[in-house]
Length: 374
Image 1 (tube, rainbow, N blue to C red):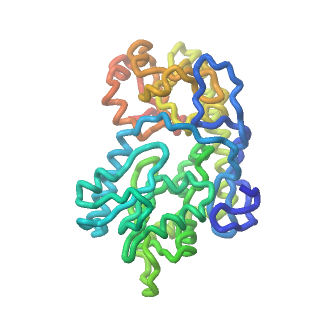
Image 2 (image 1 turned 120 degrees about the vertical axis):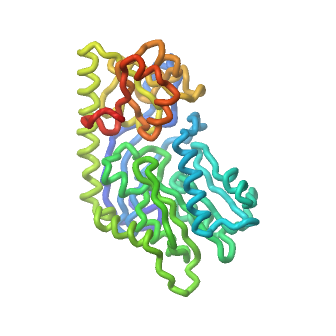
């Protein structure tokens, strides 16, 4: 990407709003006996002044094969979303559906096929074109969206699911920024991108996943000038209130990154001085920059548990912290488990009851300084 060219509109005016310095690729998990050092790359967020799209400034990393396991929270949210879209009358029997999925895995096609929709696996047109967290992985946002809208048949609908920029701002989710994620959408920015392609948002649904995600339904602007319904208008109003186009508002994430990292480091030091063993849970991409910014090593965090066998025997990128299998929870009987993916709380509590049975507790890594989870 040209440093001055927006990935969506090509605009050349904007500002860097978040700079996390040099960071390793968060999907590159070296073998534990690999001494490193791991390659690092600049990690920065840039806000376009023309179309208001927050985006990854540059990315020299090469995506690796995903190694994660799909969380139950993501599966549950997909079922909820399909039910809501069906209730709105957008999913009729015999409807053709095409899906652009996330490289991290997961699909809605089984749920949609159960409702009588017919999956389209070639590049042909479809009545419903679905993108669930896939669009953000495209370096050329303009071309990627144009490809999707071009496949929407006459009278069809485009469904786009995204982690809302409003959520990132309001919850201080600075570590949502990562290599390979090229765009961070506000409803305002997506509406502008859709308009460029002759589409308009029609309705939207909000979900608690990741602290706040949106599923947006859009269709061709047929000249009738139908206004978006109240759900879309509400999101646009909230975007304006929060200041998603205000570079100063987004720059507040820089301060949040510093304070969050300091809080994590200080908390881990205090636990170690108190003689309390701590393990992490969830070798997630958002944990990589957090551990690096907080200068955490295996002396403070001796392991990160993960459910994916493909990650066992590896280490967290840019650190010496090993990734271990879940049996370590029962073996080590930690006094605290630092949860890097808060959406997993119900799932991990049910799967690993020995943590609390051994007087341990789950601690939200994203909200350190707040009361423990639950």
